[in-house]
Length: 319
Image 1 (tube, rainbow, N blue to C red):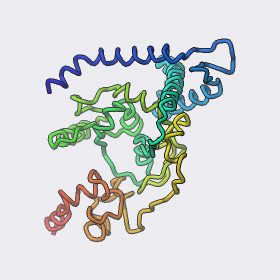
Image 2 (spheres, helix red, strand yellow):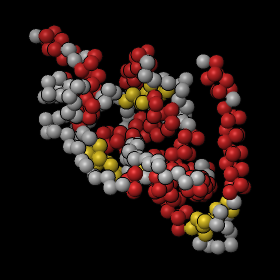
Image 3 (cartoon, helix red, strand yellow):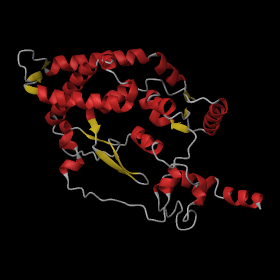
């Protein structure tokens, strides 16, 4: 606890070190901005960053902001966020990292990137005509990185309360209580129960690291929800030397949920886990069929381990 307190108090010094290190690396490795050529925006150790590459990266960054901000997106906001500078700094940083890795001969290292982005998946659930969810408990670990802003559209556009919560029992209880209180008061807001860890802006350094090394996939298949556009990440082309999808022949295997599985309905709140036809019989944590039972965090796994008799109790009470 003492170390965490010291780190919080010293966070501005860590940021200064990171910034100074980045500036020093530019000077050491010889990155310069080329203002003489309309086709080159920067040169790093003799390697050019073309205007075309910059334009592609900038358009991709703008599209990411557009997807996240939706109605709140504006050119003025892009300027205030210095998106043009962010993109150029990222491109320079990517080239520096790739050059350093190549110079050190790092070849026995590969990454198979299957990171997903939760906002498009939440939007797909919210747009489902058979949606039966009243509110959302935001994941504390994800929110530590992305912050609270990406969830604003849920409360603003769909009028659903959101509470970002931690994972301790008291965190979850308080998070559910805060959602119920919003529903009672007729409010739809984004509240932060996990304020001891999650900040409004998230973790800027982690977000920058993601932006520097990854980009959105065109589409990605979610078990129970199907294909959702721009809902997952892949490594940027600059890191192709360490991209397992590029280095090796990885088959595009699809794992379809059996027809008896009703994970999609569970995710949308149409049915409770124990109402699924295969819950607790053919589908258990030891022999999972659907994605909601595979993960220990899944709704079906949680119901099986902690509440599998709830449906029986309700039926007996009703009788």
